[in-house]
Image (cartoon, rainbow over all chains, first blue to last red; front, side, top):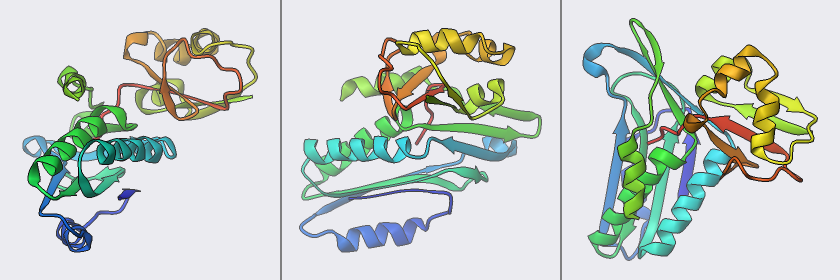
Length: 146
Length: 82
């Protein structure tokens, strides 16, 4: 299990390959990547703020829950903070399991929890000013299925 | 002494990301009442409590959470990770 909360960009291909290569006994690897939407070109940048200390603890707890609930060989979460441009990768989740159902379910679970329970806040910087991204009720509702 | 942390638009409205407070507040709600009285920015930041979340010693908590022995309380809007 690996967790990295970092400012630097990450190499999606290299991270996915390293994750798949290190895992043993798995027949399935699922990866999800979140990108900065450029809103049709109107976005100048996205600023992501987080709560150092709590962020790592909260995500580690989610990953522990996922490992306990599904039959996973391994899990990886990388989440960035700081100033990102449109199209850049914000975060990625990877899960590995013997069969694909566990890896898919655990990746969705981790994504739903990262959205609403990991202490990150996004601010969109546009040509006409900046605005904090509002949390969506649909994201909160998504937690109920788990 | 309790460290109070603010994130996102709470930080912007209050004008600082952290302050230290000597307080006798028994719960988070009591602490909020104390903080609201500190400045116009504080009052504005805490005006709509339904849009606020709180973490006590880096764990999500309710506004009824007790503060005995607590070192750090953070206030922030609903999270937008992922």
